[in-house]
Image (cartoon, rainbow, N blue to C red; front, side, top):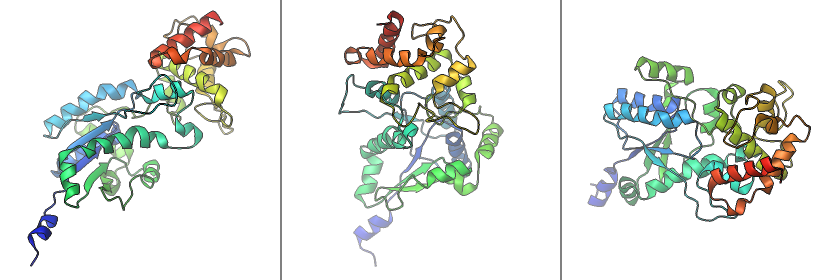
Length: 321
């Protein structure tokens, strides 16, 4: 007969945590759980501070759906850095790139952005979450549900997320188990009468597609231009956010060049960066290098936050100093 301590092990309740990106799959997953009578204990969204504007707008929509199903609403968590190699301190992924004069890790062929800005803050939150603490103290594992669908792209991604031997977490991918690809997820969301969310991603992610760049507002296009300009002096093996020019479709290595080619910022328009389109296109061969130089010359060490960096770089570019 099992002892009392053994019985307690058998009765460990496994808390259910949903990692939610506020995208299509992240809406389809709780929708399926609602139909199945499977209630999550916690829904976490890790905000890198640089998502598409539509993602931030959709959080309230998703929260209405979750509340109507009797689910907990989204808990937003953020990575909070404590050690800074450069000044000023940064608190978003965009600010991280501006402060360090670099680009997101994916541009260099790595995927540390997700680990640093998505996975780590969610795990840190759970470290102080009572149901998780109690579960771990009893030798159990928290069940973490991740909304990867059955499409080929997400199937490749799930091979690199979640260690089966993780002592604290058990990872499952319900949409993948169901065989729901992105098209099916969209159909299920529409069937329930909810609007389909926008793709969840940072607006400057190197995986952004040309069509998505064309849909960005001018203010975000300007920030991309300045990010690439700020990083350009330090780039050796890549050209920009899109790495290198592709031969198959002639897509440039920099999104800045794509913006220039497509004339996505109309001539004469005033932008948040304080210069006109002629200063971005340059109408001269040295335009982009001049922009990079202006971004580099800005007094970044006395600037607090990305808005200050943008303002300083704009002033430097406008004055030619």
